[in-house]
Image 1 (cartoon, rainbow, N blue to C red):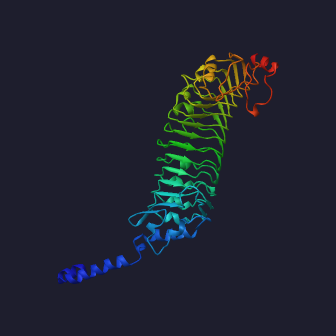
Image 2: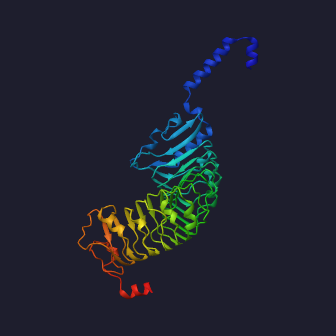
Length: 405
């Protein structure tokens, strides 16, 4: 047609057609520029969700206007590339309803989030169709069922946050094979079974706490790139010394409330950790840092550690060694740091310690807490202890003789 018009050199007609096209583009509803598949997908998603009372998130979702101007919708050309459902401001009531499977039709989607609310139902299997997805976060709702194993098809996924929901079943091993993962946050669910090994060499945060995971973790199951690791409040078992010795970039470690066994590596205390939580496991053996410990908070309580307390712990601000099997005298460096208020918490109760060189008239700073009760000595100073430490000041003599023997 255009060739025929050029041959006839009817330029005026061409200009007229062009003018009419521009006029129609300006006057026709602007949503016509959005890909029709994306347009219909947004309609389906809207129909399956509603604002909770007090939320006005969907007020801007008027499908007679441009969907790329809707709250939480971001476009690149005629495709939706990010969908953030719900008002992100703190205290927003959030949304209710279900995630429609039509989400899988947004083929260019790179980011999908939902603010805390009351979304129920399962996570659609169609999410696996979003090959460009990099960021998936639908935390603090009531989503249930299994985590789709097909999420393992999202090879570019970097962040997976499904925390504070009601997911059950096991963590799909396919998720552990994702090569680009940097953040995996699955805490506060009802997940069971063993944790898969993670191959991503860019993984920096792994948070699986408050689930019902069991089994052991392979020494090579976590990459050395990890900086944040929380596995607390599960039923995980097995030794962790070889696993931990490789994770020298950790700045936060919480393995508490599990059934881990064996010893812990001495180099662990040289890692740039701000908070070390290993309490309430079945860890055992001596604890021997290789250098002065600079970690502000160290909690090794309620384990089976034994041997003497290393003086290298005297620089820790909050030290919990209670409910173990430590023996011998408390190092004098602890007393110096305690009286100088450098140590704020020193819990040594429920061990087999035989003495501490401290003047009974010494004034312990009000900002510091010391508990010595239920050891193989009469505490030379009377200090307030936690109520759960009990009322007995000294361990029965027969227990001390038996432990020394």
